[in-house]
Length: 135
Image (cartoon, one colour):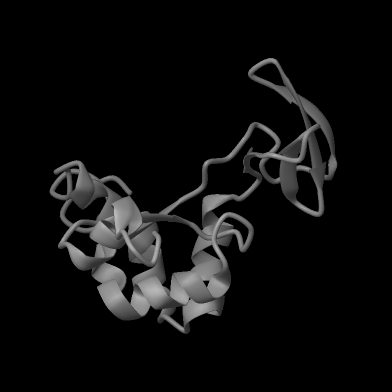
């Protein structure tokens, strides 16, 4: 987003589209997640992780896709300081959404379950535990 151009992010906020969010506090500032919640509501939010194989592991060095990646304080960066992905687990994304926005836990869980199923048109088959669906 730019003050002279909406770009993809602005269009996503103004449209009826679902918005995918990496809620690790690094990729997106917590206040931005809160702003998205206030603008879109929980029904249009999808929690994603962009996780590396080092997700959930202790800090240290990993090689991912041929790149040297250093994980420090849960943040994965290449040698030049570029974000390499996240180390976020989906359950932690849900907890962070609640922390960042004040969203009820039930709604935050939906951002990681039924909402992604809706995005791909499979809400009758996956995404909840009712009616014989797999979660």
